[in-house]
Amino acid sequence: MIQSLFCVVVIAFLFHPLLRSAQKDSLEAASEAPRVGIGVSILPYTFPNNDTYLVQPAGVHSWYIPVQFGQHFRWETEFAFAQANDSLRLNLNNNTVPARHYRTSTFSRVGMGVYYTHPFDAETRVYTGVRSGVVVSAVRWETFLLDRVMPSPFVYLENIGSFWFGGVLGFEYRFARHFALGAEAHLASYTTGAMSSTNPPPSDYPVRFPAGRTSDAVLTSANVALRFFF
Image (cartoon, rainbow, N blue to C red; front, side, top):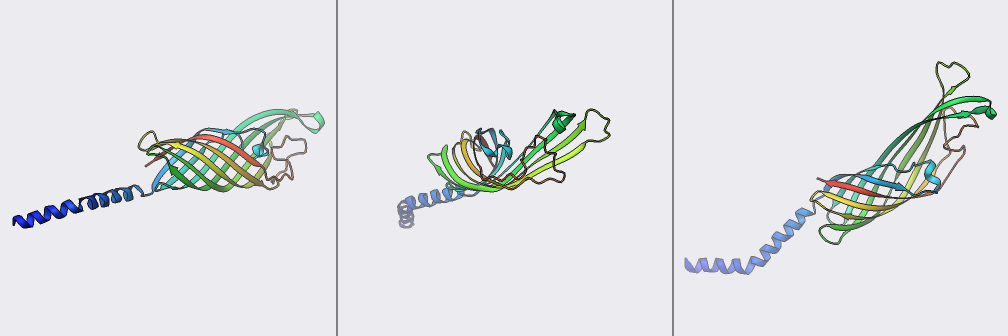
């Protein structure tokens, strides 16, 4: 009995490092399970003097659904929506007809990205990747002529669609178990087609999308993003 117990103790002592290694490997494997999150760009900034401002307004917040696979791979869905309303008074037809215009501008974008993430330690990581998607911008005009009574306004619509492709370079710091704060630099190429409309605006309208406009413009932007991983 004593000899058997002694053999068990010796075997356990010899295999203890292997057992600890197996336990460590199992813990690391568990940590490699995909982690799903949600995020938002809290401080978006679009650099000025780029041709894509007509397509994408500045300061649009993006929302993210990141899925982190282990330490080195992330897949992310991005979507954004923005709407702005304003009014302005213009004189049409060579400054002879005063009119009040109510303008509603909408912007929506969706895309997906694949990123390589490199951890420096438990709290910090850098990541880089590519992303692409589609974007739609639209402007709705409602015009009232001020020199006559109008029960309903004239309505004009502008629409433009675009495909975009770009890259991301970012830095991320995990300041809590589930929260990560990062800064990103974006570069995106927009390929837009000609403006289409069900009711083309008159030639003297300050249209947002000039008729026949095409573009392969490049957009540069940056933002600070907050992500929460479940």
